Amino acid sequence: MNLANKLTLLRIFLVPVFLIFFLVEGIDYGTIVATIVFIVASITDQLDGHIARSRNQITTFGKFMDPLADKLLVTAVFVCLVQIGMIPAWAVIIILSREFAVSGLRSIAASNGLVIAASWWGKIKTVTQMLAILLFLLTVNIMTIGNTNLLVNFFPGFLVASNIVFYICVVITIISGIDYFIKNRKVITFDK
Image 1: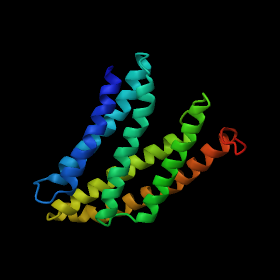
Image 2: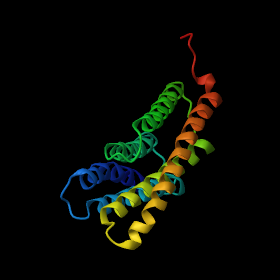
Image 3: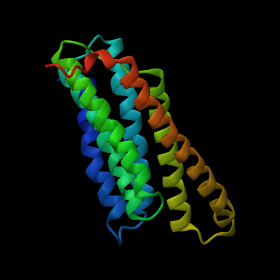
């Protein structure tokens, strides 16, 4: 197993670690540790792709598991944010629906020997998702620690920024999903 695939597996392993520190009450500095775990997992996402391409170590395992690891991480964090009341469930349902739909489209394409590469809209979607998540996690940490005047003064700004980036993320998620289906409509045939 090459290094890129090991980093992908590490990212999958970090998902339950994030969940434990974020959701289990009574863990000192749990949300801070969860935020650090999310950042490390996000870095592994960038690293494994770079390593696989630069070392020519792109594998079938990596093609399947890398996007799955990304979806597991993002889904876990968004569901946690719904649970604590930071974001609405309907918006996360839109995000998850797009992910399932595009994954299904890619599966159909793969069964026909085609590969659907990540689009520009898909990459922007990923960046806005990660940025929104990071801002929300910082907001949660400010709320948790928030007894000092300095942190309390920053809280409203972080919350507003988090929500703005999140709703931009939802819009871009919809646009990117539509873009994938328009550009790859030939993959879907109803006559077979």
